[in-house]
Length: 213
View 1 (cartoon, one colour):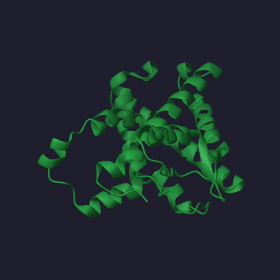
View 2: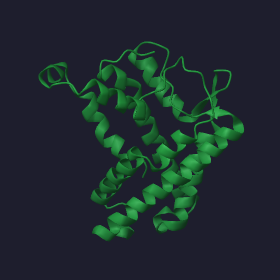
View 3: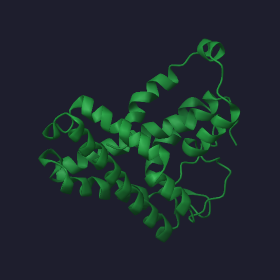
View 4: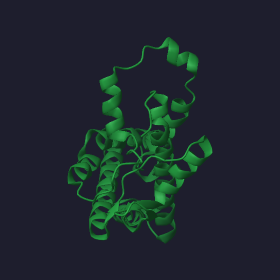
């Protein structure tokens, strides 16, 4: 399942103490900036737009999905999910290919819908202060997108992309993925992992000592 690796990494990210950060040499500033450009939040003050084919390509076949879906396949292999695919390299290949296909379907539908409906589906950082308010913003952003006039609304393209991917995966997946109930479960897991990823993204600039804009 897409972004499962984030659920495994998030506790480690937030468990890092101040003493650990002092004892460990910080990464090179350029590396931090590159990381934040790839997975960090879009500044809250940035103007929304929909002409983002390059970003769509990176989100589909870039290094983050290539490595992330491999990590997700590894976690699924460890959990033996789905059980019908068993173990071994062939089973890992099925899980990895399935994750890549799931992400591909999701990104295609989300990007196409965002262009048609003029929704900016990127994750925008919260303009508020306070851990709870920012966390709430991150969770709600799972289901919202920014309009061209700068307002947030329910995102048909984002939500539709997840539902389309969950439905498509039931076609190539095992019996445990088929049927409306299993499709709903897979979609729910995808929404949950995206919400967790959004929380990580929201606080990444703070973790690396970068000022929010």
